[in-house]
Image (cartoon, rainbow, N blue to C red):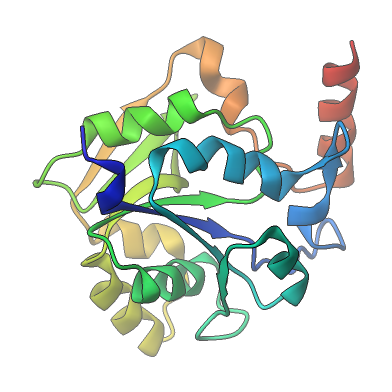
Length: 194
C-alpha cells in the first residue's frame, strides 16, 4: 500500500450549490458539518489536507486552503487547483457533500492503485465516482489544458486518463451518497434518526 507520506488529501468545497442554495460543506448532519466528515475519513490516509474553496470560512478548520484557479469552472478546476499545489504523486480527492463516506472505502482506492493508472475511482451501484478517487499528480497537465480549451466536464477529463474502477459491495452503496438538494438532506437526517 502507498505510504501516506506520498498522499495528499484534497477536499473540494468550492461549489456554489445552486440546488442547495448554500455552501454544502457547512451543512450539518448530527451537528457536524459535511466537510468535517470528509476530513475525518481522509485524515488517517494522507500526510496533508488541502481544501479547495474560495470561501475563507474554511480557514477555521486549520488546513491549507487554495482558491480555484479558474472561477465557476466546476470540479475540473477544483481538482486542477488542488493538484497544482500538491507535493505528492498521489492525491485522494473527495467532494465535501458525502457525509457517510468512511476511511475504509477510501483505503480501497489506495490498495487498488498501481503505476498503470492515473486515476483509481470508486464505482457504486454501477456509477463511477470521480470525486471519490485517487489521482496522480500528473493529471494536472491534462486537466489544465482542457480548462484552457474551456472543457469543464469532469467525465470528459477523466475519460482521457487511464482509469481503474473499484466496485463497492451493495452494503457500501450508501457511503457514497452525495447530497445535492434539501430533500436529499432530509432523507439522510430521517434515516440517521431512526
